[in-house]
Structures are given as C-alpha cells and as structure tokens.
Picture 1 (spheres, rainbow, N blue to C red):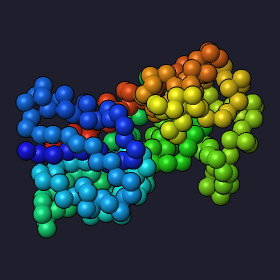
Picture 2 (picture 1 turned 90 degrees about the vertical axis):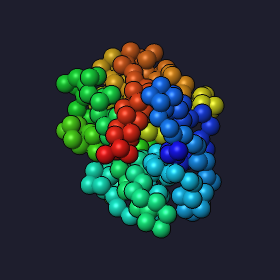
Picture 3 (picture 1 turned 45 degrees about the vertical axis):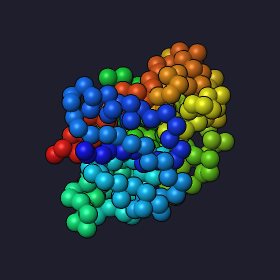
Picture 4 (picture 1 turned 90 degrees about the horizontal axis):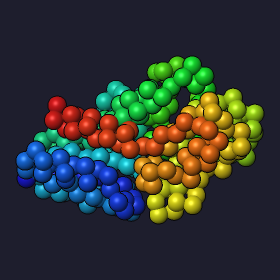
Length: 248
C-alpha cells in the first residue's frame, strides 16, 4: 500500500487527510493518507521518511521553507517562490530521492483570478511565511503591485508593520490577502490588526484559512461591503495539482 501524508505542526483538523481518504475510497486506490504532526523539522527524516510505502507528501505551516534543506532537488517554480508544499518521493530505501514542488500557486491563482477587477492593482500580503511566497509569485505573474505586512517592519525587504498601516494605505490597496493563521479554528476570535474602517465595496479580501468558513478578518471586511473569499477552493486546487505531481 502506498502512503501519502501531511507534514506540519500543529495539524488538528486536516483538509488534506479528509480529501485524499475520500478520493482513495471513491476511486478504489490502494493507498492511505496520514498526518505527520512533528514538533521540529529535525524529526522529518526519522518520523516521516522511514514510513513504509511513502509515495508523496504535502507540507504546511510552519515547514514550507524549513523542509527544503532535506530535499534532493527543487523544481524551478518552487525555487522562484522559495517555498515547497508538495514533496514527490522517487524510489525508496537508500535510493529514495525527494523532489520539492509548489501547488499553492495553482490553487491560489485559479481561485483569485475570477474575482479580480480593474481596481485591484495594489495588494497587501499579510504575513511572510511560506504561503505568502506563493501569493507573491502569483501577484507578480498577474502584474499586481504588492506590499508585505508583518509584525515587524523591514524596509530592506519591502515589509511594513501593522502599526504603519493607515486608512489611506488601506484605501489604496484594494486587494488584501491574509496569509497568517490569525482566526483559524479553534482561535476564531483573532484577526489581523488593520484599519478595517477603511475597507470599502471595491476591496477584495482573501483569506487562505478555510476553517472557519468565514474568519473574523472576512467577517469584518464583508461588513464594510468588500468581496470576500476563503481558502477552500485554493486548497482543493492545490490538492488536485499535488496528486498530478505525485503521479507524473
């Protein structure tokens, strides 16, 4: 039996495990999908790579960048992004090779594109983790100017702090993408600290979180008349692409 799985910490409810377990059952695929919740990426070789029949992995928070040190090769797109969320296992035993790829870009672009309007020329990317790198890649591809926002400002790397966000800046950036875990279940009472009063009907607010369906970030944006989108379609899109990568 082939084994696939998700590497991250903490994992809790796993969309990927539900998705692939149902897929394997529906299509009579002799495979299983496991959650590999490891507290430290240093445990990756011991706790993950020794699993019998290992055929492919998904990688999530907080290891999309840290996992790269264990890979034998990284495809061109993932190299440009600087983050990996899919690992293809080639061979096994002492001959095993790990190839890093990124399917987040496909999921995000296909989910975002239908919602874009001519006014969405500037974006704020909230957070600077692995997922934000895929968002940046897509925005560059689409010709949308972007600015990262994090807890600490870093002018050299085009990063503003949340404290620097003014109402005027929010008004001028009609696309806001939350790449942080703020608001994710079970801590649903949290949200990024931005001037929500400056959000209006022309804004598109996208949250990579899918659980809950409407985060506090999206709820506040919706109350201001913005178009909102959660991360479920992106997750489905990246899962479909991950399966293609594992079977190429």
